[in-house]
Length: 227
Image (tube, rainbow, N blue to C red; front, top):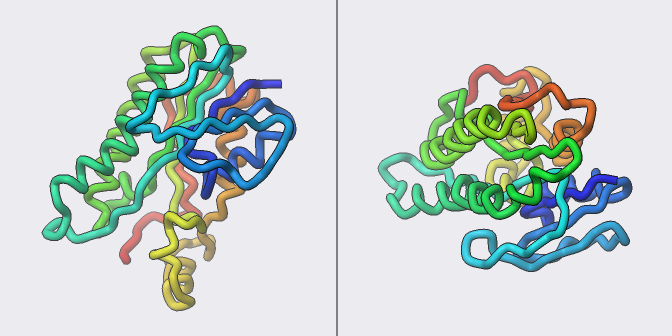
């Protein structure tokens, strides 16, 4: 049984990851809100990743950092503070978690880290300047740490397309938008959180011991995208 820390597991993709892992692993969720589910293998710490002290944990095999943002505006309407806020939650929060847990993670069994990017970093999507810039930094962090922490700790990132979560609710707020999003993906679908959780579960598993420093795009076949 692995001991897995999930940052941001109370909702969305993070919560789906907790659900996917908790039956066969000891899962420690760290987020502002407690997950709805109860399980004997699940421990929760209430914590704001940007402002609070992270808890001390005696052993960790994997760290999964899920917090993110979708702040979609034209560049003319994006304030510098919004760029800073997106960078803080997507990048600085991840760095804070990694630095805090790194000493104990090094002692884990086949230890690994999973971060989250977005397909917007590669596709050049309109109105994504702030989030794409922040997530591009996450991808750079993934590749750098994949090299730096090898061979002890594997580091990978998942870059999903639109996923049916509260965070993406503005993109899926009516039937017309859902139809447009669906049609722009060659597979004629967008993601559900369980699909992303399955990729995260694979990347921390012993089946992925030769994979590190990689960005895995869950894109439903998309090669171009306009809102």
